[in-house]
Image (cartoon, rainbow over all chains, first blue to last red; front, side, top):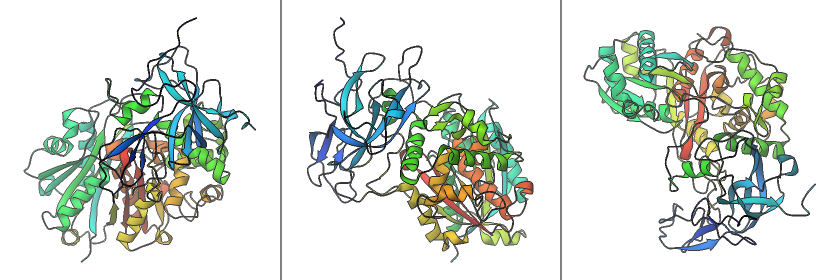
Length: 144
Length: 393
């Protein structure tokens, strides 16, 4: 059996904890606004002059705001197998952060298995080039 | 003091996939606009170009490129780039020059030559560029349009059949438009039979990219009077406002919205026409027709609500009732919209103004909206760029 892939598709965007991974964001020390990705030097709240940020693990569970799929192979720099296998995509609302984060949905989950408001959690899965990426996966028991 | 300027002439190069140099298209559109205005090229004092990012250096300095192609004659030049709002920002630059008295008559122009297939980011390993990052993890332009469409289905009960009706309507509108790229009528069955691209949107729900050019000759009201064009349509408002933090919708090319823990979430698209209405001193009830950015069929429905033509969630009902067809109470995209044109980024916002001008001059032939007095445009592109222009008679 091959060793599990370890290289993230984007360095520093998420923890590599296979069991309970988190997206890595930043939080403004002055006004509390969250950011994803975390590369931020100046707070973007128009009334905040904050320049200090703490790295935070974003909530790893949220609810689907909307969803779709990629029925056609995206252009580079996306790398995919031939033949291309469609994947689902979800925009997920994080309650504590009051923000929506996009990501692919765990492989094998089609759009017919998704609905708006569905609870999902963050998982790590390899993309076709074997680089690890974050994906949203429906929580067991939230099927309908 | 009136902040209006006159639209003396408009011109376009037909949209298509011609594969020629964008400058050629621009010159055709500019000469058509000059002829339409009855203005001599040598009398144009300011050239305001909308840039293209896909045609090398001449595209970055579009204002100068077109001025040279038309024959250097010492006009002042300017180039604007603001993604889909480039044309509107170029128009805003011309309006500022005219209203400040620095010039009386200006050419506003945009043209593009587009590559085939999906719009793709610049090459290389560039994790600091959000546009590169989102493609790296498999998020394309249709992804965003589809997320908005699915959201409408979940919130308002819209169906894929409703979206197809928008395509059917726009295809009918553009059928006879000599500047449109796609001039073919489609049935709802045709739309339903086209390939799924990003569920729930099919190939025929999503706009293509095109080559094309559009140009305007604009002037002070005083200049218009002096050349006997006191009745020319006027630009009554140009809104190019930014979004206001925190944006409530995940916008291309971002992978996340702003966090709304310290500010209320706000909708960018709705802010654009709000400012335009305020500037023109009119309301949505005064509008005769609209040209909106139907990057997807479902997005046209969002725009109708952002333009305050109906309450949130009611747009599909208006389409079903035929309100937005030519002959209806409030036609939307009488030109055929992006559905029939495909997007030529720097030219598109100006093409919208061309259509409103022809409509307000009662020169639109089989597409004519009877009694058109006020038209509004709306568009939006990458990184919070967007615009809304009001033209009145």
